[in-house]
Length: 226
Ligand SMILES: CC(=O)N[C@H](C=O)[C@@H](O)[C@H](O)[C@H](O)COP(=O)(O)O
Image (cartoon, rainbow, N blue to C red):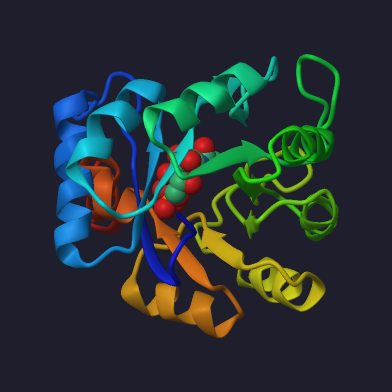
């Protein structure tokens, strides 16, 4: 099931969050659909399995691990891809940066291998830079998402809380596959601006499904200590 244009809600909870439980992820996903989201993005096989019977919209599935430097690695292995698909994910999100994964290949190469082995699999390439996005599209990615802009050694910026509109714009001009804007989109106006910059879909996560983060934003804005 391909992704429709428009809003995609990422329903994820970090370990230790009061919302880190399958029942909460199910509720967030159902709420997203009731609210009109066209797809949901879920982390972990258990969550995909639990949400699949409850929603008819496409599910983007992923897993999360850490690189040795502590940064996030989205969907590490072929085995995980197969498990996510078997659990009911329609699209698989993978780290498609040019970093070498623990097993030695780059994210670009991982995309290429997946598309060679599973030509019908819909792959969302989570990238950090224009170069990575162009390579991912050439490797066969079905969607290119700006998910990792700001979260890799090349792009890490401290204190910048804005979406990377420049990257959205550049990718939309450089590749023909749909661009998904993702990362730090906090308001409906920013979501609209992402579409105007050339995105076909917009993933919103924390602003909808991470109450702890949302609370912190308000606390910080008020100048109080959290
Ligand atoms: C960098 C990384 O690990 N991103 C993850 C990818 O699945 C999620 O933690 C984000 O919530 C998601 O990308 C949506 O972004 P935001 O929560 O900013 O709307």
